[in-house]
Length: 91
Image (cartoon, rainbow, N blue to C red):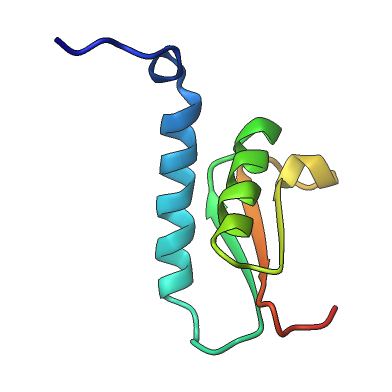
């Protein structure tokens, strides 16, 4: 028998997976061995999704991670950005 968990009834996990897939595709298209990456994807993801994405990439070993929707910065809505800094990169 398969019991549904409360977390499985939320679209949050689906939105996080969707955004991470888009960011990973964008990252794969970038030049390798950079110390800093700024990725921008279509789709405006809310703060809750961005917080989860930040924690996932931080846990993966990135030194600093910043995720934000374009409208959070007063720009046109519809995009989400992710900044990734390697551990050896100084800001």
